[in-house]
Amino acid sequence: MTTKLLDYSRLCLHTMTTKPWSLEEAVHAYEKAGIKGITVWRHHIEPYGAVGAARILGDSGLRVVSLCRGGFFPASSAEGRQRARDENRRIIDEAAALGAPLIVLVCGAVPGIPLADARQHILDGIASVLPHAQAASVKLSIEPLHPMYAADRSAVNTMEQANNMVAALSSPWLGVTVDVYHTWWDPMLKSEIGRAGKNIFSFHVCDWRTPTRDLLNDRGIMGEGCIDIRSIRGWVEQAGFHGFIEVEIFSDQFWAWDQSKLVERIQQAYLTSV
Image (tube, rainbow, N blue to C red; front, side, top):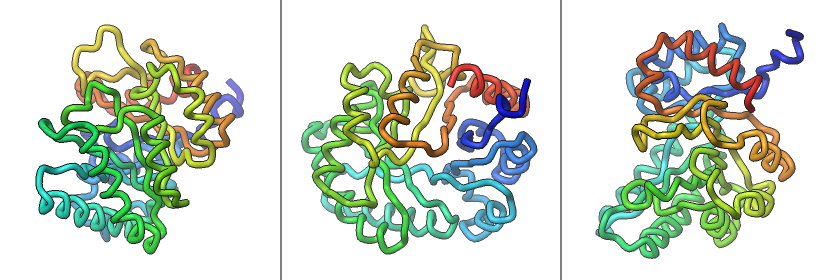
């Protein structure tokens, strides 16, 4: 296999993909494997604090692509919504300390709050924290989640909804994340990716297993499922996105593996199925 075919220059792993590893273990292993990008999940930095985690990341050769995750804006009370906004401001400060240029927003939903109301909470919440993000030079990215999560995880479920929010707030500090796991089913996906254009801030990949054994923790490695990842990648790149391709896999099965073997499988799949 030629060097060109082994090009991992755009490959990024989420620390959640190798959840059993500490941040230090993940950084060391990703570097050793020749991976160039890392997206850090907040619970992986908790044992070190933002300053300690920033030191680990800064001493590595990895590019910090983003911090996961902010959001969760809807709440049944004004006090709850204010707490969410305050927490997102703290997350923005955390991202700035880590050198993460982007925060991915899982926007939130609360059972009993109508979706239209939850979406307004989200829009208002993002609007309230955008000035803080701009001041910290940290971008925010709305990630639509699959409709199966609409009740309790995110009321933003399509690229159209995410694009509408970005258009309504009209800030260069706000964009969208295209995650194939959450969006592959959408008949409007191609046109909404084209509409998003330069507002696509990140691109996440994994696969949809059939049958799915768990709605949260049974994602597949690219090529194992039914998602046409290469077509979606093509649409994203036609829209102007040429950043990192981020592998985000939640899987009880793969978390039980030798994580080094998992990284090797992901690298193979990246070359053959992405």
